[in-house]
Image (cartoon, rainbow, N blue to C red; front, top):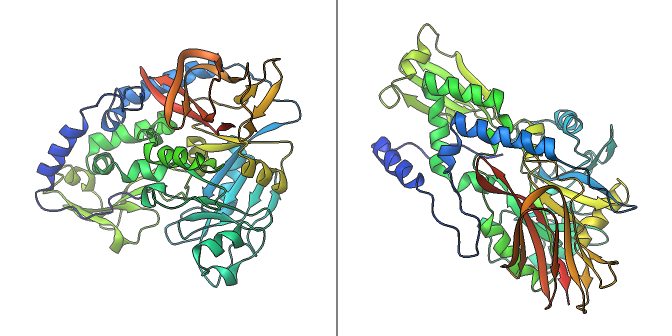
Length: 461
């Protein structure tokens, strides 16, 4: 899901790290767009007491959760987009493993995004259709997009940008802008949508926490605490960096003022975060992951981390001193997913729903969001629009939402918060002006509001 220690450790590193840690421990006020304030830094969230407090609140929410009846004729399918298996040297997982883990946590569909490796085709020969109750749709991560053409386009992958987009989206093909932090200025013309959350970005922008996490593997006491955290609170540990995706939603909100764009979650799962500590000699270890060759692992010495000597005591060169799996597919799937609202589970229905914006993004590990609904109601109370739909502004038009647990709700129009409410499972707002409206739901974990659900917009014209 994310790569740890992408830069070498320079001399004097401990002094620099100390300064960074001090800076990172200061949590600022809410952003200008009225976000709820962040109470704990990511490093503070790594502590066992913090993880336990979050876990306890997750269990409380699970007990509180009420079933929300689905809209008649529609189903809420948990889907994974931006998923990797057997497609690169930095991918550690396999398709059979992915399937088993999908069944374990109730994932209904996986839309694969193979790293492009010509002459190997990412459509032909890849899993497609139902596999033991899980729908697979082949696709690729290429040129800054997640692409899901209807058929092989192997001979057209080098087309100019606009032509390439038209090729991908021919028929019921889909294309989503990916890794928004790297291409925030990219035009949205012709796109199906874009990622509105990517776990990789949370990691990439927070090197201090990653270094802190990595260093825990080189101290016996800290390593023992980390192993205990992974045993007791695995979902909470994987989510410790999950933050509000400001760069992503800013791009989305700007884009939806120009055209309809479906927001999806980038799971970006690889199962490549099995951390390994390997002994070189009594004073030296290698730190890396399951996809790293020894020569690519980071060499750390007792001069920097004295606890290494205790780890290597009584062991032999080449021994694996620690191995901790942070991101098995089932855990990654629950970290974030795209819930697609469709009448049935097949490729045509899922494509149609995604293209129409009938979907929402959720951090499922916090609480099962299944049944969430964001819609527009006419003055007579009849449903006038669902997520992704356009509706004409008229007297008495209301936007409504139903949630399986009470939450802190934010309604946004063109990036600006126009309404908020705390502790509601039912929300309503009288619409007075046209615009693009979307809804967020936040949950309080360890006395800190954290984003849970992002709806797709309703376009009031």
